[in-house]
Image (cartoon, rainbow, N blue to C red; front, top):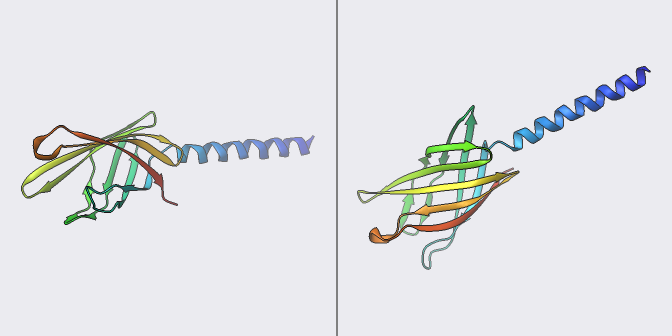
Amino acid sequence: MKTYRKAFAAFVAACFVTVAALAADASPTGTWKWSQPGRGDNPAVDRTLTLELKGEQLTGVLKGAKMGEFDIPDTAITNSSYKAGTIAFTIELEFNGNKFVSKYSGKLAGSTITGSIERPGRDGGAARKSDWTATRAK
């Protein structure tokens, strides 16, 4: 009888550990990486985003990068949210006195975020939308 109790206790403990591991993966907290295509003939740029979810507050920083002739600084995310596996945030950059806002949205599934980025068009033109897929860095 004691053997069954020990086996059952071990099974219950394993279930709790598994659920805790799955819950950790369900959080956007972590470092995310993806490659962003360059404009025109410019090469793709590797991007890194760190996210942290505390309660219902999502914060993070998109690491700086060199894109063509521009050096983009580290930029904190704003207008962020995370609910039911859906992530949304904006990145605000300023070049030559002009403010540019990019809107990111995506769905978290395990170690992948898949979604879209909406950027302002050139010279006041229509907004451009592109896909992005980020993977959790190990």
